[in-house]
Image (cartoon, rainbow, N blue to C red; front, side):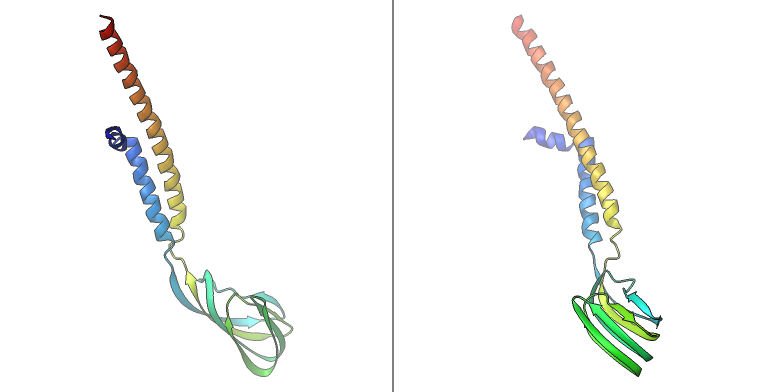
Length: 167
């Protein structure tokens, strides 16, 4: 047990373990999430559009408001679809749980009010990964170096004891 604590105090092993601990903290920090509310709006010409809020990673809930003078619109999300015919009117699609896809044959205005989750510190996971690799390599190299040193000490000790026994 004494050699275990001695090995942990070996500089290369200790540095590697510290880097591994730092990488663990970075991994936990990168998973920090926050709830975000966002609104996006614009004008869509005839065609197909995928409306994904830019600052949200996981969409929790959204409401889509569509208005047009004359347009037929199909809104699709999460195995649901709504077919709307707009003629100088405004329609609201509620409780959207995934980014919607719109297919329209006319020009229309849209407004997407979304609530979702984002991970602002997710970039720390890359730093944590590199730190984890460096810590693992240092720990393994330190372990190999420590064991080689211990092996040499043991050989030297046996050689010394063998010399004493021969006298």
